[in-house]
Image 1 (cartoon, rainbow, N blue to C red):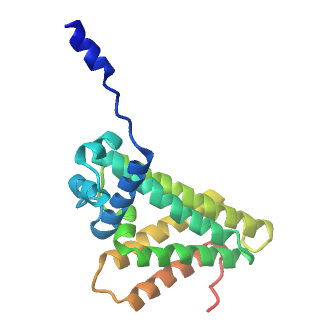
Image 2: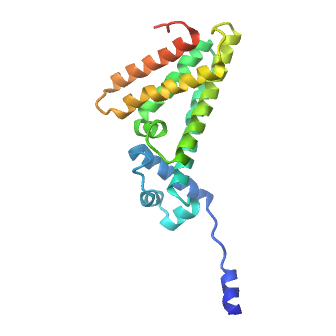
Image 3: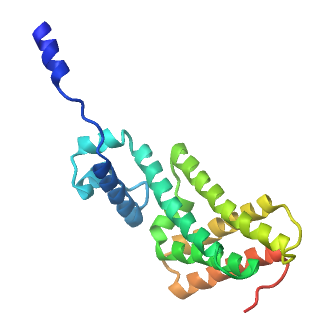
Amino acid sequence: MSGANKATRSVPLRTPSPSKRASILRAARELVTGVGFRDTAMNAVAETAGVALGTLYRNFPSKAELMVEVVADVAQREVDAVAKVAMEDGTAAERLSASAWLFASRALLGQKLAHALVAEPVEPEIESARLKYRRKLARVFEGIIELGIRDGEFPTQDVQASAACIVGSLFEGLIGPLALDSLSTAERQRQAKAIVAFCLRGVSGKMAQS
């Protein structure tokens, strides 16, 4: 009995591998990009990542946990891209327009993934991660609006409310273009541009220059 216990204690515990974890995340992101959250299966993630199913579950005990990580990873990339544009030279209106358009155009390019991040029905854990994404994005727009108010370009307003409205307009306004396969690329772009113009008009009180 004691010998058996000693043998059991001598077996090293397996810990998650950072490299395998990264491979799993890449594979999951690739699959979500193709089919969305709901139709991404754990065995398909393991196969795409080149790991055993057991290895996958050692790194991510549940599909929901894995999808939360996918949302966090993709969301940070999108926020970083928008934030970079927001920091470039130009007026507040130019920065707001460019940032909002970048978000919209990237969403249209990654149509399935963007729809998953915006509108696909998901578990509460994943929805919580998506809400964090919206808040991070809103903070980028808050910075632009504050700049516009400080420079006298935008009227005084509730910065947080305005930024939240921009994010809401982008997310809700893009659901149709992202979900409808019948729309052409040109039609999607026209609707995205109309959404961006609406956001700018709402913050500045002025029509966007064509």
